Amino acid sequence: ITQSMNKPVKLSEDDRQWLSRVTCLRLDGQHLSKISNLEKLENLKWASFNDNDITKIEGLDNCKDLIELSLANNCLSKIDGIHHLKKLQSLDVSNNNLSSLDGIDFASLNNLRFLAFDNNFVLSLNGLQHSTSLLEIYAGNNKLQELRDIFYLKNIPTLIILDMMGNPLVKECNNYRLFLIYHLQSLKALDGIPVNFTEGGMAKDTFGGKLSTDFIAEKLGHSNFLELCELDLPHCNIRTVDLNSSELFKNLRSLNLEQNNLSCFGGIVNLHNLKVLCLNHNHIESIFPKKSGTNSPQVISTNKNASSDDSTNQFKAVLENLEVLHLGYNGIANLAALELGRLVSLKALFLQGNEINKVDGLDGLYELRELVLDKNKIKAFTENSFRNQWKLAELHVEENRLRDLSNLEPLTCLNRLYVGLNRLQYGTDLEKLECLPNLFELSVIGNPIARRMSHRMMLIFRQPNLLSIDGIPVSNEERSKAEIHFLEQQGGIQALQALSNSYDNSFPGLQSNNRNPLKVSNYTSSGPNERFWNPHHNEDKSRSKKNHRGSNKIPNNRYT
View 1: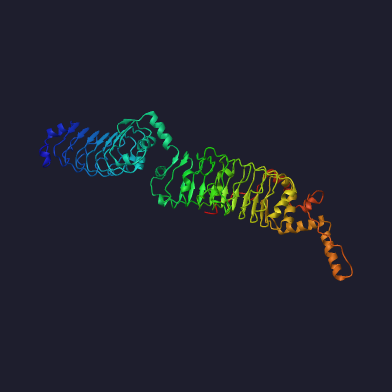
View 2 (view 1 turned 180 degrees about the vertical axis):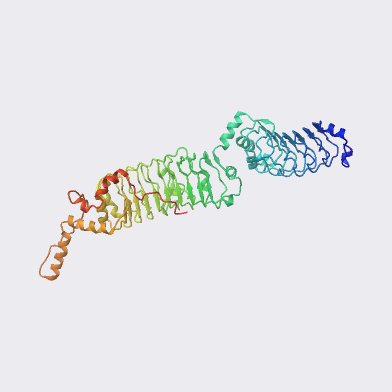
């Protein structure tokens, strides 16, 4: 040994045979600066080089059966040269000058059970995510500051003992111990203290189902939140949102939290630049958590002259840039309780598949262009349902219980209306749509009134702006037939009036009795002429069987 410290030694044949039988080697405190002359130790299993001056791991190429290697209290700044030690189970490199674990190929060391690198200068646990066999890790007294470094250990299913004491993150991070217990559920001991059942329950209550920056970093594999424009986290069992820093996510524009367990928006309101929010299939009841003792929702006041006493009852606007909101299939029954009036820039609102029976609480949504209320329990609209929705261009109310189409007068800009699969029975219901001067697409398919195609002829005649009915474009030929037919229905009165006017001009002395034109409010075609006047007569039965719904698909988000 003394000779090997100075120069390589030439071995005799007897020495070679003797060295091949060595299985254990201990050279602690020998002032070694280099490992050498171990080429013949082919059966070496345990080696210790503690308390030396070694700066590099080398000379172990032929020691492929090595099980335990200890290099504590040396001068190592990097760990390499051990990737070929496939049987290695224990590695101790504590009390060195290590700043990272980059040199260790943990993927090749699939038998490694014990790792100690405490009392170094390690800044990150990066690299340990490739290990799948470690049972014990001792990483105390390093320079670990980021709590999310723990995520590198989540892929180690066998980890039962972890020591992190003496790192900055232990003191600086709130709930450090519970955080580790929650994310490393296989742990039996942390920092020398056993993990008990009570702590496991507390950790689950504290961190379970919480959308936080650490949660996002774990899912994404990085923490470059400023680069995020879209974030999709469906099916993650999220119950609460804890995102308090708007600056971290200032570039986030779209957030998808479908299929989770949210009951309110929570910390989502801090994402001020968000434009698209998808919360389908949750349990949303309101934007903010419900306060105890509050039975009725408050809404944004539209009175500019409201007194200061009323200001405490006014809700502050949130998510000022949000334009598209999906709240389908949330079990919503009370639309007003959602406090949607806070979302002052909202342009598209999707509320399909809920339990809504009354349309209200939309007063603050002045910019709303598209509203989807399909598959609810709405029977009728009230006079306040759409009183501030002057800009609404598209309305879906299919598969509800509508019997009446009253109170649509405020919707002067409405272009498309879909009320299929409801309970509309009479032609007078369709007459109420004449208050919509800009309507060009209408679907009433699946209603009692649409079981026969007679409603189509009446709509074409009464509302010349319509371009599509029940998904079928209106042709010029249909318009002509409708006009001729209803002139005949009126008994030629308009033609006689025109003739009378011509006589008035020819015979000034004659006085004619002006008659008001007959207004057609309903039309029912029957008899032998129906086949001629109704071009779709032969299609009625096939259409009712197919239950054609027309062009009433929910459009894509066009406001992003």
